[in-house]
Amino acid sequence: MALAIIGNCSYSALLEDGAVRWLCWPRMDSSFVFGSLLDEDRGGEFRVVPNGPHEVVQDYLENTNVLRTVFRAADGVFEVVDFAPRFSQHERYYKPSMLMRLLRPLDGQPVVRVVCRPVGDYGRRRAGSWIASNHIEFTGLGAPLRLTTDLSLTNVQEGRPFSLVKKQHLALTWGEPLESPLEATLDRFLGETVRYWRRWVKRTRVPRDYQEAVIRSALTLKLHQFEDTGAFLAATTTSLPEHPGSGRNWDYRFCWLRDTYFTLNALERLGHLQEMERFLNFLRDLCALRKDALQPLYGINGEADLEERILDHLDGYRGEKPVRIGNQAIEHVQNDVYGEMILAVKRFLVDKRFVGTEGVEGARELIDHLLRQIEARLEQPDAGLWELRSEQKLHAFTVLMHWAGARSVVTVAEELGDRDLAARGAQVRDRAREILLDRCWDAERGVLTQAAGVRNLDASMLLALQLGFLEGDDPRAKTHVETIRAQLSIDGGLLRRYDVEDDFGVPKAAFTVCSFWLAEALGMVGRVDEGRELLDRLLALDNGLGLFSEDILPEDGSQSGNFPQTYSHVGLIHAAFRLSRPWD
Image 1 (cartoon, rainbow, N blue to C red):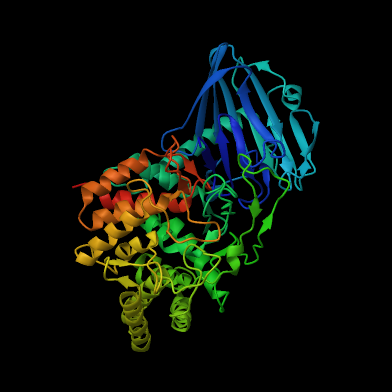
Image 2 (cartoon, helix red, strand yellow; image 1 turned 135 degrees about the vertical axis):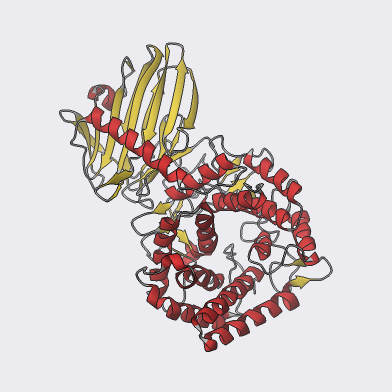
């Protein structure tokens, strides 16, 4: 999967070999304008390609989200530079719904084709078009869509080949058109965008080792934050199957509460407080506005209604149906979210950098409310972290998050001098620990199982070390890590999420973040060399651009599932910081 992501925290696009394979406008969770990733015919196209056999190499301009693609054909060599403008302007960030493309000949006289055929309503509607003075106007898509270019408009509209003899420019805009001079504006926007990303990277903390991988993961994580609200998407795409023929095709363009603590921790390690604050404000408002049960996921504007629907008219990724929008997981009970929200919201009360932040005053009441939810649900079965659709159990990961959340309540309450809150938190913490050790600990194998009363294992329980339930020097931690590795390993360290049969059978693919969890856990139990060896192996399985999807196929090490996957990159960041040599 040689896809590259570009974006500006207002939208993202996926490109491959000069083709825009995925772009949703006006929001990251809107219908695609270009979606050939899910249907080559109905998905439309925006493609720059040589008019004949060629070789292609694509890479990012170093420390940016600007993509450079070089084409080599018999008649010449040229490059395409693709980017989404983002930079500081008038005391705020300029991040328009605008895709800019620069074509530049490098050698010879290459013959090139440019095709732009957008669609709407998930490919049900093909855009009309008409040629104006210096642009092509596309109609019927719900908002003005304009391609402004100094190329021959007829050549572009009809997809005719032409000789690329000088630098050429294209700007595709949704809503507000580009009215300023094309060449000067594109050149300025490119320079400003490159400088923005490189300044952002300079403010990023990195470990001594694995710097390139962490920087690319940080840049990718940044692109998954919808800046308008602060929410983080789980992935850019929908319906890329976890493995061929699985039917596990889900829409991940939403914000999962299960990821919150770990995403915030990654941002903390990277040193990006501004992104943390935006995300915390989104989470605080989400919890404060919903005094009843929390869903496992919400839309990037905080929407609760994300009804799952199947789009039968689309062929699916490489013919893999179904294509889904929305996600049925909104109906599931996942009680781990309350502990995760406490871990997030406590930042407002214990992190002095947030002094003066709007809304901090209500954080104590919100934590009290979340603790009451845990008190009521402490021993209630649920669907678990992985949203198992068929059976509810008392999942160990849920109880682990109850424990972690309640422990944090004690910390916050002690700082606030609130004895009643501290006592309640301690009671829940101790009861959750008792449940884990009495009902989920398999003494024979020395491991925490997936749920109370079962022998199945779950890779998420490796996080018992990261959360501090098991300390690295505890003999139980060592057997726990090794037993999970032995039972869930598909190929010497590539881990499945679990080994229980669900609605679709037993998972065949390795879940990428689980393998990063294992690498980190190995380091925490003193097996640093093994952890580094596994991490090196995982990093070698990226898609060639430093990007990771949801899953890895064990038969050939290729990537599968929704892409890029935020959770995968968060796991990489944690493992890299844990296993790196110190700077000093």
